[in-house]
Image (cartoon, rainbow, N blue to C red; front, side, top):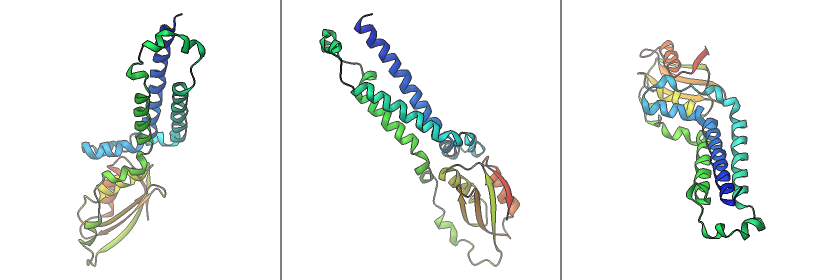
Length: 210
């Protein structure tokens, strides 16, 4: 087998390896990407579609890191004497898909994808301006809803965003770590059942209310 054939095989293997790394990186954060896509598309009910992947996130991240580490090792490892002696390596410039530049682009993309849960909430509008709408009402009520399916700040922000669309909502504080959302609202304008329906409409499910 010639050195050129070996190079082609290595190139194909690298593409498959990087493809696997990209898929793992996207899968690791898709449970938090979906709520943002739901916000953009207006299809709120799809927000929790991939929440079942959240328990697998640490493993998917580990796979992605291992794949990238191996790809960089392959790219940076010293060349053998046979490779150095091969004249074709001196004359032929590696294509873009085999270059460090492409691997660098993939690495940056993977890091951005894996870090997505950390900044997903920035895609949602702030609710600060709404907190003064009915603050003086005598009908203020506070309820806490236990919610199943939230996996990151993006999920919590999605719940807050949809509940805030209801008339009479003063403040919403959703916490994915505690799997709940505390809602302060004017009970003369909105009921707890309507709030529950809004939360369920995101795809996440209300288990109980306190």
